[in-house]
Image (cartoon, rainbow, N blue to C red; front, side, top):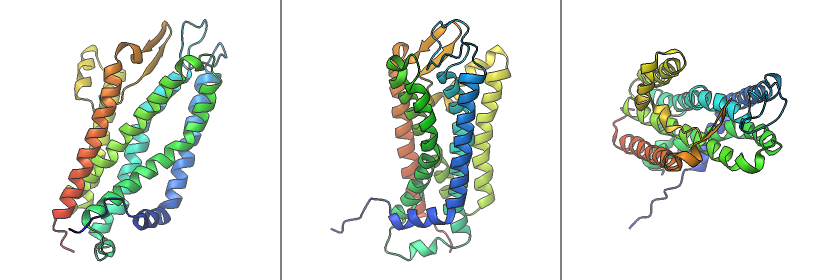
Length: 276
């Protein structure tokens, strides 16, 4: 029985990094600047008490905290970063390679179709991690010197883990879309940006919609992005204490969905007639 190597191929990943490194570097720098700006504005410029805290816990004259900055960062990250990064990289490494026939470069090798697609998905996961990782430094620095670091630092780390796991699902979803509609690069982009627009709609309804729109959260994919710590002027709402099961349940659901979508993307790519 012949053994099939299930690991991603490093040469595919390296080749994609070489051809996209300028775009990746630009996105990494842009996101780092954005996160630093949000932290400085939230914790310093718009903070009357000048007290650095992970959460607001009935601190007089304190209206901002690191958790509030994280909320702003996390709400925008899946939409503006993970979604855009995943869509762009899937377009460059899968859709365009298929439409231009460049995918034959990999398919003429000894690699299986499963391994080719899995390597490309893994590349996009690594890109997301690479772009998000530098921004963790200022977040950890601020959280480490916060007055309530001993109490809430672990909660903050869990929230960041949830953010990253949630972002991986976009790569799997967009890879599945690219596999299903590989015959049309334009259609793939339309569907991908429809998904992003779908989330924008729920964001707008959440911020400015009438009271009844709160029930739409059950149809919002962002419901799987659990906010562990939420600050408010009347104290901190700690979901780790009130709904611990859902925090880890959402993480598990994200991981399962990511695995299922990735498997389906590879399964469809393996059996698809690419007409090259």
